[in-house]
Length: 102
Image (cartoon, rainbow, N blue to C red):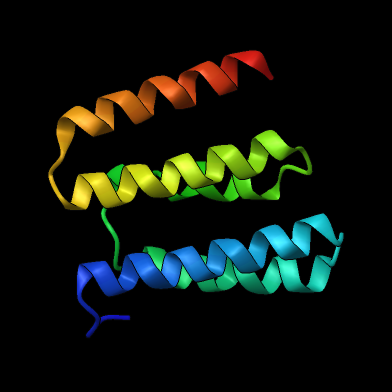
């Protein structure tokens, strides 16, 4: 991961979150643990303001809202990378709305 560009790291994160969602929906504890470890390894090379722990928690939720939240957190990462702070604010509001409804 160290040699990857930021956008490639985000692409890899998207794949890993998809893997985690699939494992969580299937209650596959081995695959969940494996995906978490891979995300943790990747997370060492991503900025803290991407809030990876929130993405992981959301992705592990069995509810459809968990998938929505994980997708919004991923979108937030991409918008932070693109420095689209207006869209980051909108995504943050969407995240807050869903989290408050849980």
